[in-house]
Length: 399
Image (cartoon, rainbow, N blue to C red; front, top):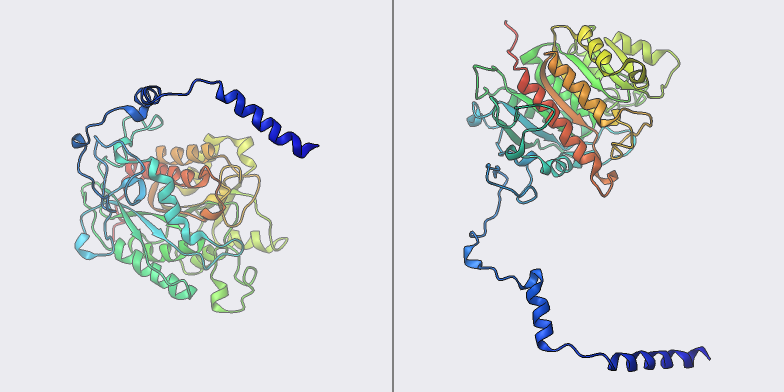
């Protein structure tokens, strides 16, 4: 029965359709002409087609925020490791595509590329915002550039770390463009996993000496290598959870001015991990304490702890709750919001803390959502750090 009904229904529909008045050429033409497809465009009035190389930088008249080959926020590209570029920039954005030190999810080697994708909504042409009245950090006193990525081998962790250190030393050796404001270039590094902080601190030491590390992270990252990695081989000792322990052992950190912010991790041992962390010169503000203290009190505690020391800012995006930063390697529920993190960084800038360098690490784009929430957030954090560097020029310590 059902098989007979189908053609009957189809025939009935055809009969009904045959009674409709067919659309003539005029009707079809009128529809096209009245739609957006019918608007006449004088092609000769368009500019000649161009390709946008990595060195492309937006001017005031540019409107597109998604064309061209990506640099961070459409900044000009500079080969910052080349000595001939000394004196051409003040602040550089540099990528470290490295993830050989992870203990859980891999993929942070793609973080620098993902962060540049996430920052394509930013540009020097639209660099002002409501939270920093009158300041465009891309066009203030400092020349800001994208230094590209530092090449490093994906096959040998220790070789890669040395390559990153050598690259950072080459950049740090350059003179800034505006020596009247600052006498050393400063870098914001995009990771990569958190291991990269170690070669960065090594490279900075010859310029700045010991620095106070402000470590925004859900984890401590001062684990003794025997606790995290087992101490089995030299390669296993260096990872994204031990690098601050090693930095302390090498004399790169301030003795007692370092802080963990937003901590909430599990521990390997009942007492040893926290005792070792204290030995490495760290105190901490746990993630849940923010609800009791508030942003202003957190900033005050940090300022009192750091004092007049030079500050290195290291932001692991897992300091944020997974709701705001799902695309990270070692995820921990119960973190801060993006707004809270940005407010704290802004408060440290207002307090005038002497920031000499920074990294934003552990962004693993494969775990991001379709809205690119994490990538866009990473770009915004870097924009906030850039405002801090613009607001607080820093002179090298006197010999």
